[in-house]
Image (cartoon, rainbow, N blue to C red):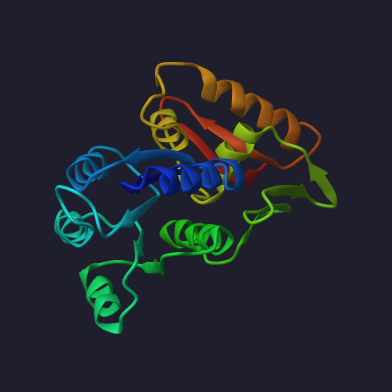
Length: 225
């Protein structure tokens, strides 16, 4: 999953980005002002936008309004120092999905961020089940039947993205765009390597296969023999 954080306070931005990367396994891009944030939000696909209100150049509320007017449905979590009722109502009416008033607990922030990512993908429960596969998006753990499967961090991220889109064909380009940040060079066979590892760990010992290649289109997570 890929997150855009628009925050001009450097220390806070570093702490949030580190938590999202280390505790949630998300790829994170950071914008330091509203103009840059709007440009990045409209230029790349994101699974969550974390938006501070008090930004230079373009304030967070104006960014949010313009982003929603552009037809973007990505969940938005707003960070605000103003928790007055009127400000909250204005934010929600502008298209925010949730908000946190500063200062906030990083654990609560991560829980809300993960919930919004799930909601944006149409998943509401933290545990995703596909056939006998269970993926716990809170614990970042995977089981198939009674067996716990140990995955490398990037293998888990690929699987989680596919699990949020069960039975949908996901292209290699889409996976790259949602699993890596702005600085990643996307012309690589790295996705094939992770898919191969997932097949070896999740499918080789089971009659029902879960990960399939749709030649020329991408990959799909669905049970079939």
